[in-house]
Length: 173
Image (tube, rainbow, N blue to C red):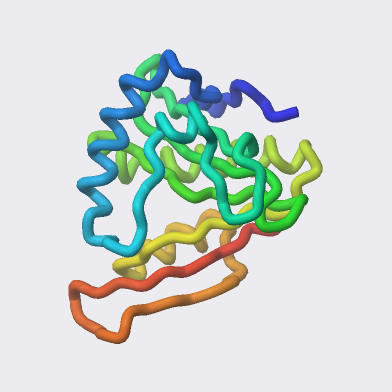
């Protein structure tokens, strides 16, 4: 059974409901602008996830969830999780975003640490993420959070200051 609320020292994570949708849409709009460089990936809207579920190929739509991230009662971001993908003992993170005023304050690290701990008690063995990387700093963040197993790497054919790559990483619980 998935935890509906998870707390850290500073943050509270709560499973999203339709009541959260208005704020989630605002955060989604900010995130879409932030990730507009990544034309190869379309972020699934929170409304679609809450109403229909996000569906990786050949998997169950109702295995997708959004955790709203709260700081002192104010939603500062959200993380999407998909249970049992691509294997039954894996949690997949297709999207994770903290709003601009709260970036670079170690909140992402807190969120990942508490989710990984909660998932571990539910008998999940791994957590994976597929992310676009623009800098080494982006990769260093994921590695510092324990995502140190590389599952796949993709790059475009150009190598410029405006290009980026994708990497799929895994955390072994």
